[in-house]
Amino acid sequence: MSPNLLIAYRFLTAKKRAMLMSLSCTVLGVGLFIVTQATTSGFEEFFIKTILGTDGAMRVEDKMQDTIRSMNAGGGSDFIISHREGVKYIEGVEEPKLVIGGLNQFANVSGTSAVLRGNVVVRSSFKNETAQVFGISLEEHLKVSDLQHQIVQGDLATFRESPAGALMGKVLAERLELDVGSSFLLDAQGQLRRYRVSAIYETGVSDIDKTRVYVHLGEARSLLKRPTGVTFIQINLFDKDRAPQDAYQMQEVLKHSARPWQDREKAWLSAFRALSVSSAITVSVFTLIAGLAMFNTLAMIVLEKTKDIAILRSMGYERRDITQIFLWQAGIVLTIGAVVGALVGIIGTFAVSKIPLPINGIFKTETFQVSWSGWHYFEAILTAAILVMAASIIPARRAARLEPGDIVRGTAQ
Amino acid sequence: MLRCTDLQRYLGQGEGRVHVLKGVSFEALRGQIYAIVGPSGCGKSTLLYLLGLLDQPDGGQIAINGQTMSNNDDAARTAARGAHIGFVFQFHFLMLEFTALENVMMPMRKLGRLTPPQMAERAHELLASVGLADKTHRLGTQLSGGEQQRVAVARALANSPSIILADEPTGNLDVKNSAMVFDLLTRLAKDHGQAVILVTHNPDIANRCDFVRPMRDGVFI
Image (cartoon, rainbow over all chains, first blue to last red; front, side, top):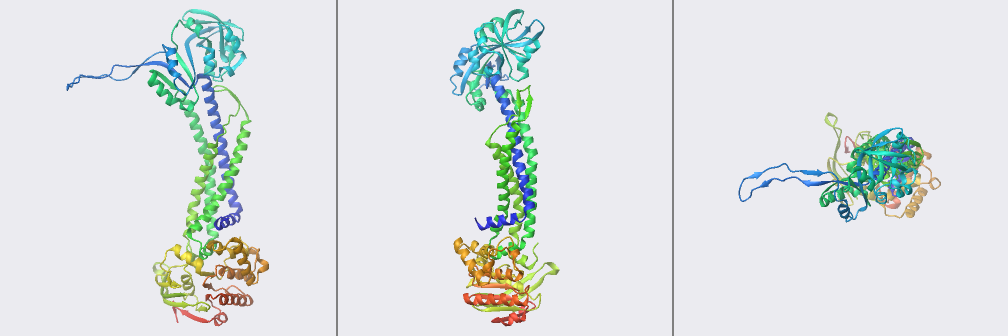
């Protein structure tokens, strides 16, 4: 052990109570930071997983067409026909096969599903509800969604084998008092067609579960009288975080608007981010208190150890040795606080993940959702390191500035 | 070996500024014991701290082994203190969280000339030479005043300095312990050829030194 570290350790252990105050605040600060970040990130990740499992990582929809551009007569003439430049959107994808062919050229695309969407009225024996019908090719759609795991009643095999089968959201089925096997009518533009509930799904997203009915794409074409084209193409990606870059390139190449999930769910993601930052700031108060306690402890030690500082200086210890001795003290508290705090974080995160918490609406869960990420530990320890070490610099520099001659003469300030 | 010429030192500020040392010149040689005596406030301790490079003079020069030190920067003066000078203070100034052995090893750890086992061996030898062989692992708080001062003497000798500066080393001890500490200091210094400069009010101690330099009002008389 270096002499400076040994001296720091002995100085610190001589002030056990003050040291324990700094240490406990550091432990709490690090531990709570980890737990709050684990829970806010956990819910955010669960939300992202839910929305990726329902609406996919990206949607390619309306065709883009350039509007008339400004024209210059040229040849040295000043004659200009000026227009506001922009893009005109033509609803839907007219040539889904061509677009899907183009999409499959992107290395990050793991699946595509052409979807035809239309507004309908669902009529059961008891009630009518407005809803949206989604015409899908089941096998393709399973590659871009978690529909398979969202089935809560019935099964997909029945839907696969039944041309007039339908997958109905749980909330909608409850409102219409429909069970698996029940028949119902879809009313689109005055055309009535009868379907049977093959399965009931639940995404946990209430806006989806109360409005969405999946039928086979061919059925939807007949019902909505759209023999060609689709409303949008749902896309799944190998790397979901690259969606914005891919969307930009797809838009440029395919001339169809492409909307990544980050853009589509911007409002919710911003809310989660704000929650994460605000909870981090709140729990950082503990770390701030740890820094203040450290400042207080070191300031006391400087006052009490002026003679020891003079002895050390008379023995050949330099100013930087004195600074190091005091920074080592903060370093010891920080190291122990970080290790114990991280353990508290691990135990706390695990304990919180077992707390029952039924949530339904933006996603469906029965317990707290937590995220296990090394970044939370890094951020917590970095915050503690910055605050504790920053608080230690002033007393450490003050100790180093003390003149040994003044101390032994008794005139040190 | 240690020479100072025309040392000037002022203390305090403004109207309270006092001219403490008024052109003091002094020389100390190996193996000799020097006593600086005089009334309180005459500048004895101020001179000692200047000679020990703990303080900087306002004028004049201090040279150790022919090398001028008084105008060097803090790092050079600190290094010179560690290598050439050992201090014994009136109030022992042991580091109380450390054992006697660790206190004696402290200057050696900083200088880094010896390996840790060699440091421990030398610290044991020094503590044995001051009669504390059986108390090496006692904390400073577990030693009497006389014992603490003997540890301080051992610590001052740890790096085999060429100069030992002692500020009232027996001022806080009873007669028996005063005699013991002085005998130790002078015997060990003579054995190792070190110059000892001590400030004292005790005429018995001063009379046993090789040279006595009385001071008054910031000058030797």
